[in-house]
Length: 285
Image (cartoon, rainbow, N blue to C red):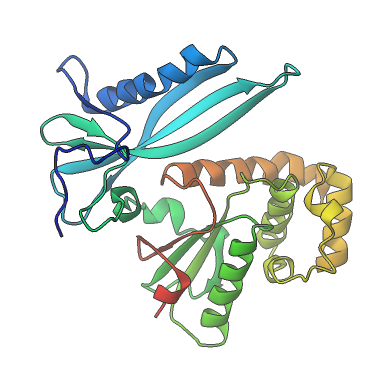
């Protein structure tokens, strides 16, 4: 595998910068990330960078001279009505052994280093009983999935994984992390209800992910009303959510799962890690 080491490949590389020795490595990467975002602040007075921090590191097979740093950005953007939207996402910046920081690097055969990067998944953090949703927790083979309950690709992926584990008897432990940061307003509440049921030993994940279009109303998907969402989910799954616990325990827990995903540079769903490597359902053998 050939990787262009210090070159800028067309417009794919957003920037590269030779950094001085005034800061530690993580501080250099964070400062570089701030510098990348600064032009957006200059051009748009309603856009502000609230924080930039390194939340983890990755390695890239065949590119030992690069260390990938997972950088989490929190920004706020004010719309024309004065409403401020706070957003958090993450990206991988690559630091070379020569002190070059870059993003958007590709191999000569067109593969993105970001997609090839292997995050450091701490088993004690990610492979926990509370997130074990399918399979045998004692299995040496681990699947980590970040998913949104209304994302159509997530629903397909979950159904395929469930079939492989329950019907084809593949030997894996499957850990589900809810990652509702997409375009579906009710996703976070629905995720919290699923997490609550699972916490109490009641499995409604399958019934939610496999619910047909006749059961999942558009008014449910687009709602922000917790009472309405809970009522509709009860109709689908038979589970009656404890709304007091939902606010105190389960919604904050979903925030933690989102943070966990961001630490691995997850920005979209579904994201599936098979034994620590980003993959697809077809890679489950």
